[in-house]
Length: 114
Length: 114
Length: 114
Length: 114
Image 1 (tube, each protein chain N blue to C red):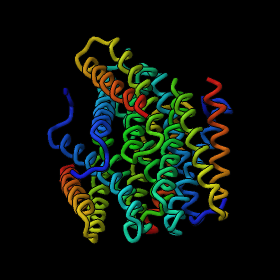
Image 2 (cartoon, rainbow over the protein chains, first blue to last red):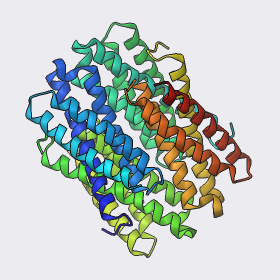
Image 3 (cartoon, rainbow over the protein chains, first blue to last red):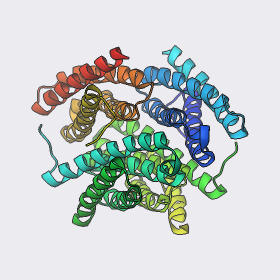
Image 4 (cartoon, one colour):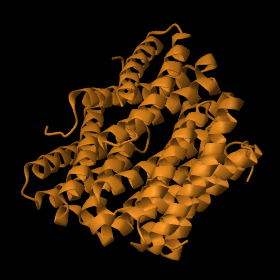
């Protein structure tokens, strides 16, 4: 596929998509399990992560002058979301934490590069 | 404010904003209460309603040729969300149901008008 | 990655992501070229396609009861967007048309399956 | 309408909605006019403003711990968008600049308050 975006930005967009999708699925998983998995603060953080990953990907796809700022906030939220998911013991939460951590790293580099 | 949109479309956009905002707040309220308020199906429907109201408003703001289709789907989802909220007895759920019902009506008219 | 979504839904989500990303990049490309590439109706259709692909992917990721409806509207818009892109002769527009067509097919199947 | 949000946050959400709607309509206006109104950088900034206002409003509506960060980025983008719109002489661009400036002020206060 022809693209005007450089390799690193394309990778960061894919990280954001993967983190967005994983957190969205994790919300369903957590609501199904209930209890501490469905605590308002945890679900809210997952919803934050879904939305900022989407916004951040869109800013990169538009090659916006502000993609550094949105990537910066995205890195912070993904990091918090990873920490929050790490509190749980089950496999899906561990995977979600890992995906968030990887996206945070990529967004942090993107924010630094600007 | 200067606008290129006719009166009825402006009103429908405001209905969508109001329904979007109300359902978003209702999600927090339901997660706080827990129990049947936090059932996956109920939260999912509220999230669906938030997103389709946003999409529907954006299609109207762009004066898209497809705003009839998005308004049509929005009307259906708002109607379902209203029915689902009506199952609960508390004041906030009743208000949310009312707001959804009003938005459904407006979107339905908009879909019919195309 | 662990997932609760079946194979076909996962593929449709990926089609929606790809179409969303391609149309977003195509908007920049068209604005750069100007002239008939930057006609309001063409840019609006690309923006419609970006947004409905995002909404449609999110409804599938949430396993929403309404994903058939959003996929149905998405199929229609992707089809129109493909036709509109096919009017142009350059390589990027042809690729965009192809991606839209492929997403339309996948969303149409998903809508039919419900 | 019953709400859990304080007065100032409600006002900021309304500012974000108004700025989102105005910038979205302004995109159509600029594409219709063409020429320097339809320059890629200008349209991209308006699209950035539309999206960050939406994201920022949603973070406040969720009472997210990160609403200060999204409001901060929103204030920056609205400010840039206002400056960019001020370059043009027509009435709609002046109104858009004013709405962006007002939203920037409100989001800046919200970001400072955290």
